[in-house]
Length: 419
Image 1 (cartoon, rainbow, N blue to C red):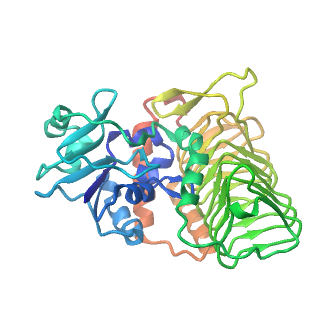
Image 2: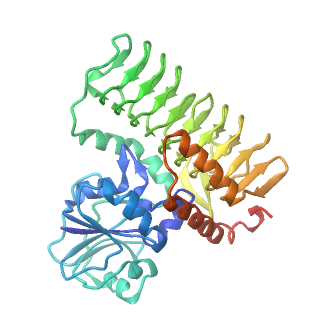
Image 3: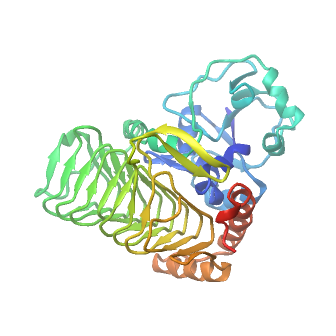
């Protein structure tokens, strides 16, 4: 089946993480939304529809890792196609309608559609053209997926995603590499190749699976409570506590306490501190003692600070949303529902603002612009520390993010923009 994953206008709702990636590449469980969409749709041919500025990024950084042939921003041909929103989260196999049909949300948002419509293009989806709106007139069918509205949904459903991914692990577990550790419900613990575990570690799978991917290292007396996942080549410091619903990986260094959070690749939280119910991008460094609040003193529900303004989530426990390349100084404190924009630097002695725009340097003196040249200089240094080569595509991406962030962050928060 020809499957089209489209990004659409709602990518802005997933800022700051979606500033630097398509929504469907966001992690959930051990994989991404896209991996689950491919797994459950039965795609034999794939088209990815994204913002024009993201097209080359997807061609170079996403398509090569896919298991099916894929093109980027190619219009439909005369073959029937299954259109799937990039925000769909899949927990079961899709049953594709035999005839053209549509699944709608809120009356006019296309979640899924089976169509035969040669020439339909990514621009139609992004700009909701008349041709795209004609999909609303198709016969409606029942939804078979969840629709992620914002990042807090990925946190809320991460435990279920971990359980679903565990059920689809294609590789049997290796033997436990350390006899002097404590395994609880050992049959639900999965070891990848060349995992290293120091003595005294507790792996508790009584509530859900513990998955340790290849070449990860677990320090002495760390406690990992499932469901949780530690990605390839990641390091868990001694005495660390990893609570249920946590995804870490790949190539991360994590210490202190982490609960119900997603940390993308190449990020460090190597020291004591608390990260709860939060979503953290790539190449982030959280200084020693950095702590995220995930509960209001009133025990009320937490609103997310978005570029469009505060957004009610209905969640009592919710932490922070931290974009790629963010750096926090020692002792940084973040309030529940905070937004920390791309490549921001936090180095204040007071509680950080709940909305920190991208490319911002925040200190006790307030917010100042973080110069692009300096930001890229730091990024190149960090890349070199991880044996990664800075490429022209990386420069193009950070420049695009600066333009996109300026466009979507400033209108709703004019007073928060650095002068």
